[in-house]
Length: 102
Length: 102
Image (tube, rainbow over all chains, first blue to last red; front, side, top):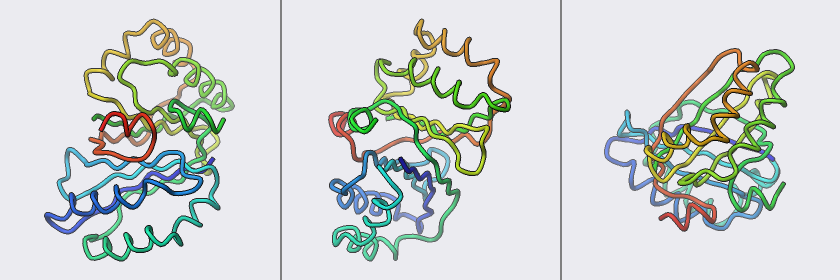
């Protein structure tokens, strides 16, 4: 499995708009086992994204999906930069789709 | 929802043993929507844990569950320290249990 943990910094007041765009666009991505969008209690202009994929290839391929490309285009003007970013290799965990993938 | 992203540093060679202990102990925690255990491709002695809970209270209560307390006791000697730790407020995302909780 392939995982990403990352922080996106948004322009002032644009956090929830970006969250909505990402929520809509990421519901049906082949190979995606988990995609969680979270706000940061200490930073009103940031989102945390945690992702689990069956492979790095599936993640890479998702960036070419029409709905994902449209979301990236719509979301880009709302983004001011990127914060922490960690790549991981999930080994397992709790949750229906993760369990199915083990 | 309540989320945690954290890195645990393990004593040399103890990473996989700690991952096994955590995997076993975290399968049935009330209020837990997602619990993902991942290795770090750049650090052979570390685990990333990403958690999503229905509330901070459920997370706190989980620390008193017998199986979690036993895992903490068994895992503690394998841990050398803690790295990054971020608290989040998940707003949604992809995955069966997350979807149910929205």
